[in-house]
Amino acid sequence: MRLFVALELDPRVHETLARAQEALRAAKADVGWTRPERWHVTLKFLGETADSRVQDLSAAVGRTAAASPPFDVHAGGIGSFPGGSKPRVIWMRVEDEQGRLDRLVEQLEREVSPMGFPPESRSFRAHITLGRVRSPRGVKALLQSLREQASADAGSVKAQEIVLFRSDLGPGGAKYTALARAPLSAPTLQ
Image (cartoon, rainbow, N blue to C red):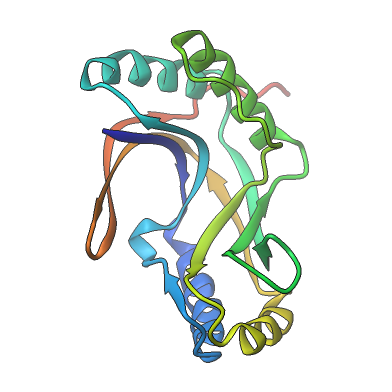
């Protein structure tokens, strides 16, 4: 099964994400738009994984979460990967000023790397995927819309738990199933 670890979003950001996505849809570009129930911040894509490894991965996710207190993240700023005239992924940036999200990812990497899941070769860039460009049709209008929506702001929300998800691909897109949830629970140092 295909697995990944993610930070789920507080539903309060969904309204802003939906407005930004709707404005981008008006460009009528050939984009597969992500449905709200699929919005999350991927911390680590694990890929195809044997069922027998879920218990150990769940424990690793739990240890990762236990090492971090809940913290605030800010969702804002629309962009694309790659930048420039040929976007493939449309996203909203997620960040925190204290670097706790980066430390959470580093801890997760330390937990799963010995299990045979190599560290990412690219630096972590927290984001919420709003859509994936399928063809060049309408890209010029989409790029203009991206510029207009660049400052969309969903505000700050509390990061409270991480989730081990299974992703099942189907004709209607991916379906995500939570296999394990782990609350961020380390005490905050004063």
